[in-house]
Amino acid sequence: KSYEILNVGSENEILHGKTFWELIGQAGHKVHALFPHLCYPIWPTPGTMVARGSSVVDVQANPADVLHEYPDPEILMGVRGFPERSLHGMKEHARRLNELAMADAEFALSLIEVLEWDLFFVYFSTLDAIGHFYWNYFDPDDPGFEEGHPLQNVIPETYKLYDEIVGRFMSAVDDDVTVIVMSDHGHGTR
Image 1 (cartoon, rainbow, N blue to C red):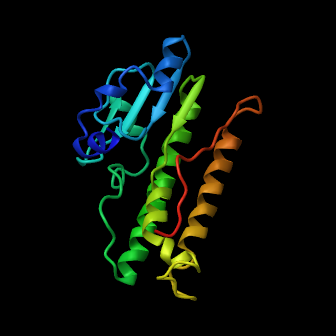
Image 2: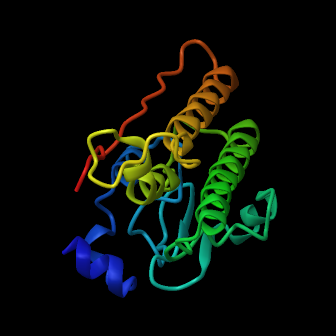
Image 3: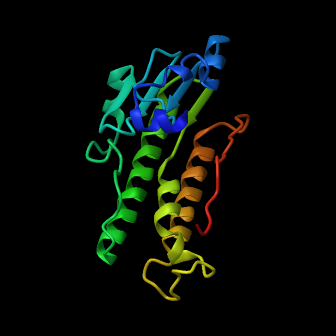
């Protein structure tokens, strides 16, 4: 079903009313969800919801004016498609993915400061793309690995960026706030 939702983008009704943030919001808590996967187009939910289209270039928000807080309108729609396989194209794609991660983090951190919340959820998609496109440059056991390749450090540098992002979130919240960092899968040689 997720494959159909991802590719159609408009048949996500199966998720309506069943997401964890909606259930928590329905219990009376203040909740906000930024960029949850497979949640475009958005639907009425408690609190703020912002979602990118996976099959269309669009971002929707409830309330819509929250998008005015996004720091970089040029990258708000996300980084789409496959990188050009030249060295320059691959470097540029990695740069844009990391730029998107930083813009999403800035957006989320600005909203953490101004919104009241009991649960604040943000999904980052770029680490997944980095794993898919750059694994063979990173893993010495990958058949396509070349020692010393100029893209060899893209994955470690991206993880350092995400460590910084998590650190900024940790600094932005009070000591009594629980911060959960999780992934739905890892990466490896295909």
